[in-house]
Length: 382
Image 1 (cartoon, rainbow, N blue to C red):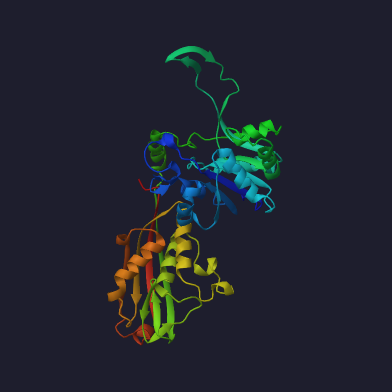
Image 2: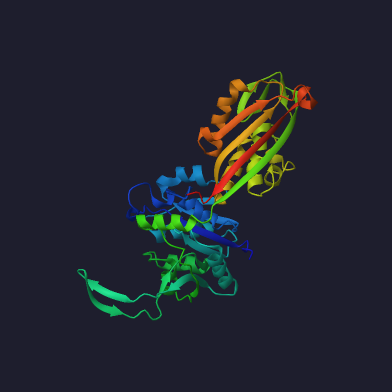
């Protein structure tokens, strides 16, 4: 189903996750080659607006890794404070409904999300996924069973939990003391909550062993993609060219709508191609005057960010520049380093090389430069 444009997703990731063991907060840990929070965001890629709550001290990290189609909001000391901050940021934005999701649930599936949306679309003021409790329940004290409890009518709550924005925001404002989750606040406010189907794989990463389980779930879904890009720019008057992010003195310049970095353009298209997301022109139309003279790293960063939002890691890239002059060899190392910084991968995974066309064709006549690029993207790497 198509997600309505007036629906937004809120993903909470401001906690510290101390029960998950040593290391960085669990939302920043790698899970099958990708951070937990990036996986959670990718699950909501069909939403036109995604708000992520982060701890203030994580904002710089968030801008570096997540900037783009998500809005970052500083969270509070509790989950409820963080959610309220995100809700307040949406007031007056035209958003009518929100799905609130724990960033520590990176394996939420599309059917779980769509069931919540469908319930809201049918008129429910609130809806949330859950699984019925099937195990026997005991009470225990000091390591011994002291009694039993009925499992009748009991469910294990999951997220995303969906609400009409005005209703859940009013509930948060009326109960600033907070609650374990947003459904609890909705019930206090008198909102009926529809139960939608949950999923056993929609686990919340809490303990160290949860990461091992999540890795096993993801292990069966490796996806490897290759993309190719090709670009050409003609020479014009000037005194330098930009190639793969490096300014090189030359007796000509390259002609283009942006800075005409032919190598970076080919690589950007290679990444878009691997994602089946068209080319630079789709995302940055040349008819739009705001991109006139734009620096090409803007395009490449967007392609790399989009790859990660869709759940892919960039494994390696290879760029071949085709020209007689300028000589690329002396600058290849700087080009590889610059591309690695923009894409966010290790420099040894970036290749830049050059060849001539043996004085044949437009490149041989030094009328312009051509570039060919290849990118390898991997999802679900062990």
